[in-house]
Image 1 (cartoon, one colour):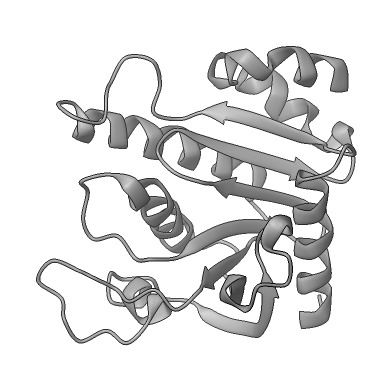
Image 2: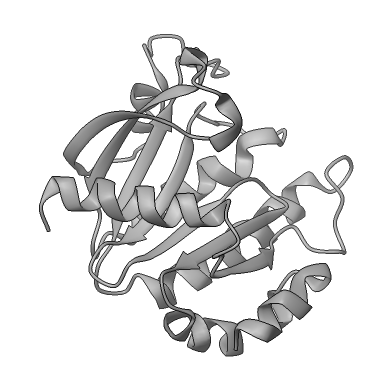
Length: 206
C-alpha cells in the first residue's frame, strides 16, 4: 500500500472513533482483579497478554505500526542519550523499517492548537511479533510504574482490511474498523475481555 494510503486509513478510522459512526470494540486490559498501586506488575502482565493475544489474531498477515510523538522529552531511568520519543522507542529494542512520516492533530477538540500537532511515523511490522509487542508494551506502561516507557502514542493498523488497534494505557484498548463484520470474530473470541459498561453498544453492532 502507498504511504499516503496508510495515512488515509489511520485518519478515517481515528476520526470515526470520535463520531456517531463508531464501529469499535472496547476491551478491558488491566482487569478487575489487580490494582495499579500494590499489584502493578501482575496488572501490567495481564494487560500485555490480553492486548498481544488480540493483536496476534487481528494482525497475523498485515501490520503497520504508527508512532505519534508531540515533543515530550523522554525520561528513561538509566537511559539519558535519547533525543525524542522515536529514539526512546528504538532504544528499547524496537526495530522496523520506517515507511512514512507526517504531522497531524491527534484529538478533535484541539481547536487548531499547534501544541496538539503530533509527528507520526509509520513502520512496516508485518510478521514481526517482537516489534508489535514492543509497541504494546509502551502503550500499556504509559501511566504505570513500569520502565522503560517511551512518551509516545501508538497504533497498529491492517491497511489492507482497514482495521486499527489503539491500546491507550493499562486500563483498556479500542479496536476499530470501517465495517462491523470485520470485528465479529474478535467480538466472539474475546467476549470475556470486553468492557462491561459498553457491552450494550457493542451488542447492537452485531
